[in-house]
Length: 86
Image (cartoon, rainbow, N blue to C red):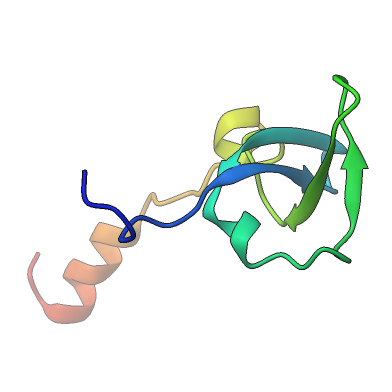
């Protein structure tokens, strides 16, 4: 592996405020976060920088099963009527 070309990665806590969940994982964001950035103490007693996210697997409708069902019935027929294909 070439030295000096890979981004620095480290542990970061991602917080999904809408689901009130925390996820600890490695990220290259750790390099951009300042030392005075908000931090949280994890279960192991270590403190990590926190990044707030809008959507995660804990709140995304696809993963939670709370997704809307979009009614597409009639769209094809309406298209055919509008453009004379049927």
